[in-house]
Image 1 (cartoon, rainbow, N blue to C red):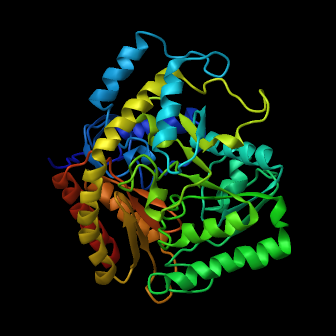
Image 2: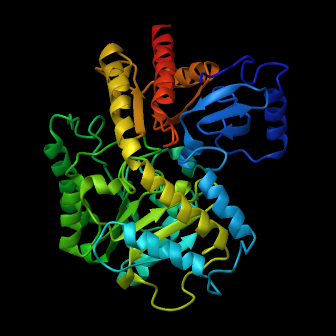
Image 3: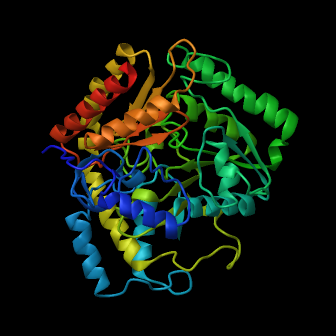
Length: 450
């Protein structure tokens, strides 16, 4: 199967142009880009998207990491959801009890890393899952401060926004957000404050980050016994799909345990099989104290978030935290079946990782403007720069690549200051993967050669 683009996306006289204009009349401004991403989606099928003009695109975005098991709804999930709709969808899971959220909580507690009892709080999104994590660590420890990383993204509500540090526009005009957060450098092998080549000197980079946390933050800014937690994505998503050195989280956990500080693992974008493991942190041999999930948890059928945590950290009193839609019966059933489907896809994702590496890594050697290529499983980032020596970000060329690819039938999304993420649904075939990677390589060649 090949993409088919007969009508230029968003062109004059197209149906897409009409709907984009209507969108801006009635829908709030968020993160749309009508110049480089004029895509108006009408329907989906497997790993393919169809726009209102009948164009057919290969999707390398998974609905921003939500539709890991494809479009419109995986048949097994669809069957389970229809059966549940015949029973009940919303069962007020935070005031009444239902078996569906218990089954999902039990499943998540079982598959999450860590040989200790766990509990789960259910919500509607990633930012809510992280808001719950903030409350959990503060009330459990009696400590108030949280350390987060530059480049991290944890949501846009006023608590999670305080943790987020991937783009300053995310905080523009909305101060004050939650106090009590201090940011530190992330061990980005390609771009870090110490200009260390983290691919060649991973231990040196990790040591610098840990030294910064202990000798500067914990010694000069925050009393260690007042720091509740450190939060981090296992692989930074919005920050550029940045993969840290393999030993980083194990060494970080040792430091945190020394001071009784908890570790929150934000798996909202990287969890649910994206990296070839159910949880991306599994690649780093660490058991977090808290894990936040959302996006792909229900296969895109119903919004759901989850915060998995050590049972001993549970809220000390009824009413400290709750919500309306948490433990939603339909969402719980969709998530249970989605997890089952993803468990069967993990070997496939691991196999496809090799294909992505073989096709993407050579671009770094071939083109001066391709500064870095990094990834695990089906989570890949390609960073576009002015030149390799300066490493200066080149968002203009990055955006041109995305637009060129779209016009050739491949849907991509930006991340970081000048990176492109390649995150197709996990159900993608080898043939479809190679088709998309071929289109991407041609788009890169056209953009950097202009």
